Length: 432
Image 1 (cartoon, rainbow, N blue to C red):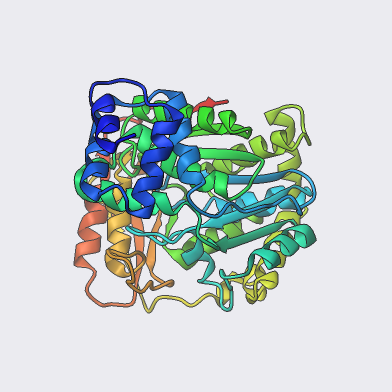
Image 2 (cartoon, rainbow, N blue to C red; image 1 turned 120 degrees about the vertical axis):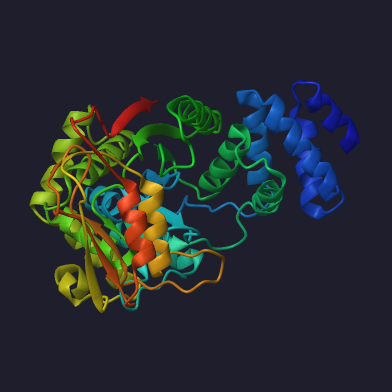
């Protein structure tokens, strides 16, 4: 078998076999297939696409290039969720504790953020003492003991994906839907969960800009997971405005705490209940989404979800008093208000502009290794369809610097004021 023959076959739009894909991924991972040949294959995939079966073979090949977490020692069904990334997305901090409070095992490995705001790990590290680095053995023991763990990746999960992603990043092939799907699903499958709910973001603040491409990605990932024996759900959600109100690490943790106290923003609460409900269904604790949401709402009202978040923080070395007293979080030294320059209704909030405004303040990373300032960020005062009068506060900027002109300009640019309200919904589609 030769790499060049595989490249030619895909270039001509033909379907690759499992053996051909395994040969190529194994060779690229161990260095016997050169980078320029891998570049040629990814470009051929970009233009010619892949069948669902090919994408499944590719995912499995990437999956088996490294460690696979064995969660068989954890009792009961293990669930996980994944978001394709958005602005203000702190969903794991609410969904995980809620489902775990019902006795469902939530075993999640997360990553750091690169871009506008930190990832789940960065948000958790806003809590003093929280340790994201625990051993695989401790991870399993903790999930058995309290039903939840949120940690950084352990071992060497899907090393082929790291090599492929670095290559795609510099060859213009990042946007290939089969390559995106295999990248995400190889890591999710390696993490060992039985049931997975995917939150696929669509819109200006998301990687997928239109619903057609997002639907194709969601359907492909669900099919890959199903072909690999997992219980799969994907939810397409609107990222044409930030999720919730808070953008920035400690600010988002505080919003997650507020939500578990029953005081969260409407859209954020809606999404958390939707994602969590599908995991409750997968665990067979409810017969319908409505019934599952009723169970979850009770866990908010009786504070069991909040107590589970505190247990998680305590188990991983963090100061759980911050969960009950969020006013203890370090605050930025300066607060600035961004005022509306005209009256009307909020017709659109460009999520990416808000995210970039937060990154400039220090809430995110422009390159790997950049330090995160957990205390800074932006809190929106107006959301899509809210009425606005000239001079009203659109958002507040929390900064540790005196000059926030660039961030202010980005926030103002993000807000589009219209004469009439617009049609807008959060949950666009559910793929089973």
